[in-house]
Length: 435
Image (cartoon, rainbow, N blue to C red):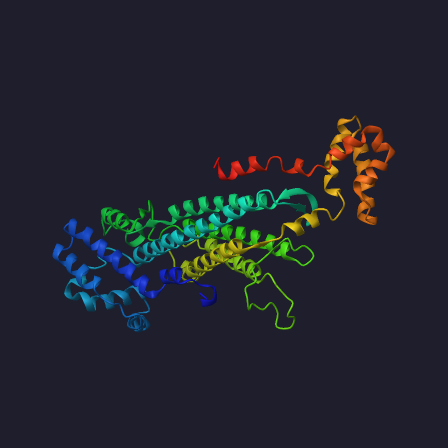
């Protein structure tokens, strides 16, 4: 985790203090269930909660113990026993380290998911507000980076809203899938601990029991979770790249907010660079890169190995912290985005009506020409615009073959800009509903 790209609430989930507190809660809830079953004294379970719950775990001391034991869970249990006293012998009855580690990771990832879902909600709110603001702001749509046909800037933002709505749905499912508890003991057979203990701990922590844990929770769940984060990151990049292109000097249809006192370049005082969206592109690459090792973690040896452990210690914090920061940054970009309708109109008209070529093509086919002949007539006039800066409408009106099929009024009618935006309301209803 790099402080530059981190936010405190998400970072706190992955702190050693939080991790050890979750470990304690897992152990203490398990003791409650064991006490109900009569495996350990109920008074011992109460003592564990009272003394362990009031304890302030010393991270440095646990690290010192681990340097000797070479085992993180044993180091923690040794430290916990210092607070609990003799009743500490009842802690971790019938459990294995993965019961604690995997269940803790599930808690951390579900908490991280809740923050990410709130981040997406904030982004969706900003996109919706700006989409309605620019619902009728006509701009040129581009394919291959080249002028295609008119659309509106609001439709562009509505598309982003729909995309992040899908991202939210995927993350909800990924959260549900990862919210899984395993308290099943060595190789997951419950030989030394009753399934009821797992059910009790799961309920207390807002998780569900893993049907077959094989000592570890199967890593296909984690692979899907981090893959989902990668898809969300890709959607962040798609919108960031759109803004970067629109901010180019020769386009300048939209621009990141440039605050008072901000500097764009150490060498060139005139510069206003899309630094935030460029940063988002880089952050998205990092989040996506963490999906592959999560997928490689699925193939563990037999009932378990720990080849996944080092991977998850890195990608758990890094992927969630980075995506949290990226989503918040993107929300800020959209919220303050500078939009230039005048430049959109100027760029739309840059090629003197070429954007209406398809309407003329279709009109000629409706008038009886073959598609091949109609395409040839329209293209030969369009190329004059590309190559010589001619006016498309004038060229069509002067073309005797075009005029043989279409009247002047019919040709001029095909240059109506409103034709291209007549279904914007339908698109918005599909995305945002009737409201």
